[in-house]
Length: 106
Image (cartoon, rainbow, N blue to C red):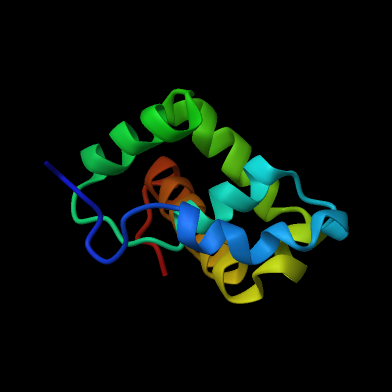
């Protein structure tokens, strides 16, 4: 159906972090980071995978993800990914604020 463009799931990369259980992240946290490393062709495919893999709604998943990317443990575990996710979030927040204020985002 609508599979990720480059990867099949978080299992192969999740094992990389399995040897470091004292990194302050739970198994689910590490799986979410591994899941976010994937690229998705369609948003609907990602949301379906979230429901299947994590047994939570897309809204709840993004709440968990937002809390996770703010944690220093996540930054230490995967700095490039967490910085990219933080940049994307900041860009979306700026665009929302600009729309509310009726100005063009910079």
